[in-house]
Amino acid sequence: MKILAFLLLSVFGAATVAMAQPAGAFTATGSMITPRFGHTATLLPNGKVLIAGGFTLCAGFLPATLPFPDCLSAGGAELYDRATGTFAATGGMNLSVPLGGALLPDGRVLFAQGYGTGTLAIIELYDPSTGNFNMAGSAATLTTVYSATLLTDGRVLLVGSAGKAAGAELYDPVTSSSTPLASLPPAAPFAVLIDGRVLCDDGAIWDPTTGLVLTSAANYFGDLSSDPSGTLLQSGKILLTGGATEQGAVDWASLFDPASGTFSATATMSMVRSGHTANLLPDGTVLIAGGASVWDAMTHSTLATASADLYDPGAGRFSSTASMTTPRFSHAAVVLNNGQILITGGATLAGPEGPPLFNPTTAIASAELYTPDVMIPAPALFSLSGDGNGQGAIWDAATGEIASPNTPAVAGEVLSMYTTSLADDGVIPPQVAIGGRLAQVMYFGASGYPTYNQVNFRVPNGVVPGPAVPVRLIYLGRPSNEVTIGVQ
Image (tube, rainbow, N blue to C red):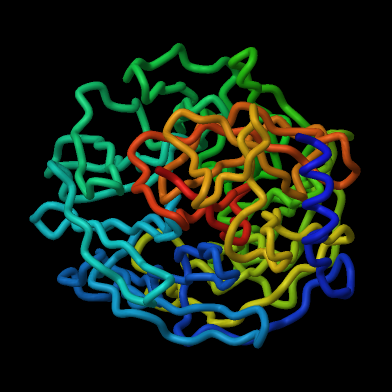
């Protein structure tokens, strides 16, 4: 089997290497069509980035009849194209305050109504293949959705409220239906652990398979700082950084270890931050960018910073890196398929508590790119044609036969394939989507050939059979190209 795989690799080659860019620097790129802060940014399978929602202005003098109190919704959505460095309008969103931006296994992006209208919260899906937003049902009981979190089984956890009562539901994108949960998460989800459990923002751990709440973690960082940023590291630990206290933003950082269920302090950042972004880079480091940081005694407002830090999990410390071209907080940042980070929007100033008559929080439209020292492209899947399209180089793990129209795979069968760009010592498994359904990953890691990683996975039930069923791999939020296999 390995000899066959090696011969196939010699035919269709390795992944495309990203073009050289100035390393360790921020550079301006095109501006968004609409200024936004508090928006979402989702990397699509085609390499473009979907920007949606957010706000253009928050101020105490705005009418209380607005969809979101005291804030003007940015509305609409746009796409960033790295090839041109420009943004273009796309689709037509129906939601007034969209929340989510979760990339589903079939490549669509989920949004839910993020503010109560008195009716059941609408769920909307963006389809990159058509560029359209389509209604996809509604919540079963929720009128307001606070968070929409993609779980490891492909379902989406919706947490919100039905009137004044708290509620939570599981939305299934395959059936476009949402089921209320009898046992609710104790708080909003903070991060999904590699075993599928959910770390909540009160330090408790919730298990979606049983609905049980486990004992709250010890030494919880969030008891001291509200709204820290959370990042899943390649080790499986969660890095929490910054946040706000009654005395202002903080420079603290903490690590959550799922194995022990405890938090422990780590080094501090170079400065205090709140409303910053924290992105895991493909080389395992974390880019901490921007945030509300500086208190202006004259205006009693908080100013954004342009500074950035890199966190090295191996050394357990932060180090300053280049500064952004623009100070910003409540912005969005996403790792692109070439390894760069796209940073969009945000605000530069937050008014004081109370009616901010003279210092409203106003969105900016600018965007920029961060180029890390190490450029690692998104994972690649290989095809028999050698161009990464069509029939995939994916074979039965036992017989070595290609899963083609002539020898199709069946539900429950274990298949093998090679890919690239998986971390050598990472414990986070890749996701494999077959026909829009997530497969069970049996093995991922060394293949015996330098620069190639092997992934073994089981064909899930419910895949619509056909001679060209799409297969895609998603690793650390970055989707690979799409190839096909035969399924009966």
